Length: 444
Image (cartoon, rainbow, N blue to C red; front, side, top):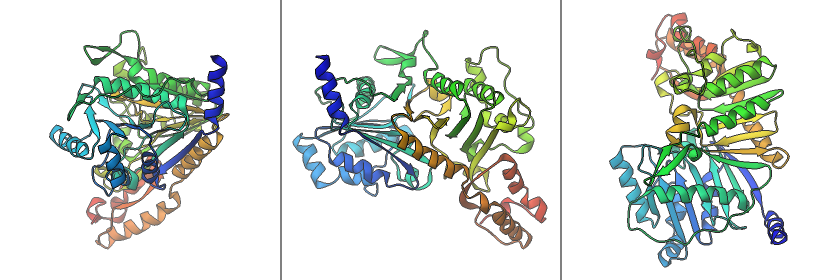
């Protein structure tokens, strides 16, 4: 039996392939649509958000005559666990429209927000695909956000892990339309070497068909980040929306103190005005694994300072794209990944916050360079691009902006994103004072 299993795994790996794509540069949705088109029997989707219009290539493919015919005949089944970010009535209306496309839609409907963005296509088979990453399947994400999506083709072990998570959540979810019966997908395969998938459903127990926080378990995804940071020897690269976890912050301080070079890119929403930053300080904590030590803290600010041991080893930059701070959602840094020593990648849907760990349902994929060097290389290329993003355009923009203020003319205050330090953003927002006018009033 063991020999047969080994032979099957060797055979399956001949067809295995992994790819990484990034928003807003790559044709991710066409790649997803192509895999849905090739599905043999089942497509299972766990999505925080997706469009319901055919301008989205994924929806266009599902709405095609070929896929609709297969759905109507029962040859193909598409199931979706949907969350949505709008008000309940609007989310319900969207789910009903998705049902009209032949998708069997459910929603978790508990106090936990289902934040996954993954698909399992023909789960547990040698010919299936698994898709996961930071990106919501919306055109806004594709056009404007910094995102990543991983494609695992023929990786049956990874598929089976995501399938198990989907099946767990599907069983806990509520129907939108008519309930249907499905055969159990695939079978369980040995986990591939060099990659592990983690779900924070491990923080919870199922009681009365709902998820409740376990008294014995907790901080499952946070601890994986900390373990990787603690193992770092010389270099950490982080591209994430925010850093709001005290254990991660403390681990980064320790890494910096022992000489590890740390480069960080967070989103524009993590900017705080200089006078506010000067008054901020971390909560005093006896145990970093306490809720109050992470809640409401902006650790990117603290990591940008020069008042801790090893601060010269840390550089924090923000993806910035609008003079008005209130526009922080428009083109946000939405990836959530970390590369350690160029050899280990951690990526997924997991926002680095207490709320994401305990109030959301998330995933984190850990990949090793020995088995996936090309994938880690692609993420390093993406990080290097983000880290230097249009920094050479900063001073020309400032000159143009200040000239508009001096001449009392208007300028478009939304600009192509740049990655800037807190101090550079301070300088930008002080343009009005230097030019004898108003920074925000110069905006069209």
